[in-house]
Length: 394
Ligand SMILES: Cc1ncc(COP(=O)(O)O)c(C=O)c1O
Image (cartoon, rainbow, N blue to C red; front, side):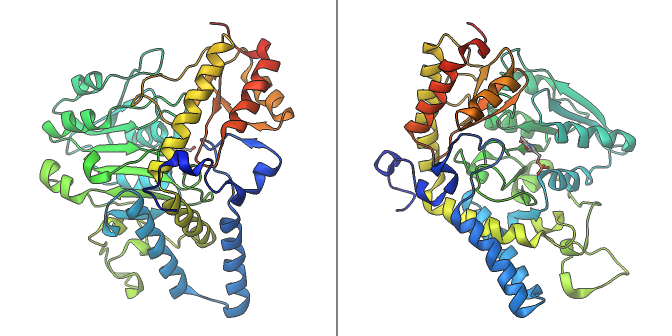
């Protein structure tokens, strides 16, 4: 199989590599991806090598470079634009630490759709003089790009926006936001955690200056590994400022093994956004998960999850339920959010029927990926029908 094969010929792609499907309809990739046998085996390999060889620093650096290259391939970019971090939060913190809010523009323009870590990290910068402005989304979580564009002014230091909202799967028009920001010389940071590995993204084409995410969800990896993509070309062309993090560490040094305690000499490429010893076990897992995902192809994954998303949506509509995710293609990611009168009770009731979903803000979140099939969707819909009293009415 390769990434050019149409998904419909493949069906639920390589589902037999994920043990969880023997017992459950796992539809919770927006929270955590399903564990592939290959990822489990990668953890074993890490431990086996430790037992046999003891310390393995050079091998580990090699694994990190493999992961860097795989992330670059996933986003059709080059390895030198990829920083491998221990979380998405670590990546955003390193980026936030580049700004001198007291002597330059002080406004951070963000939105009401952000994941908590994004809001919290920017608000932590208030101590350094940042002023945080949240552009509000509509009640249905749509956020017209023009509203963000209209809020950009000469005092805007950065626009920080989510690609796909973690609460209901609404997708923002990043290209339009980047265009508006770059016209004013303002950089854009995209939190793509809810789309990476699920929605095809070409980093150069997107045009954003920074894109952050992690491997835990649709990228098939484990906790403890995030990344930042850094578009130095766009930064030098449109922003014309050097972005040098002050949140740093020896893995961000130009020469990791120089062991110099007398100066700060960060790498020239995106590696300057890294910090300390990487999360090595998670890198082994990420390398196996990314290999798997790259073989499947994100285009194929997106085709499968889009079909399942539509099947879920029409089933919920037939039940008279309320979908809280915008309907039009281009306005949503893989997740379908469904309004509930008691979302925690509904998640638990579905778990009793061996259907795994999660909840946020009055909705349950059902998030298919390439390994799901129509039977999973039918199981979810049957459980929703059985628990119809827990769905909000249209
Ligand atoms: C959209 C989004 N951004 C950021 C994060 C936080 O990532 P991390 O815990 O790696 O910092 C998450 C985690 O669920 C997320 O869904």
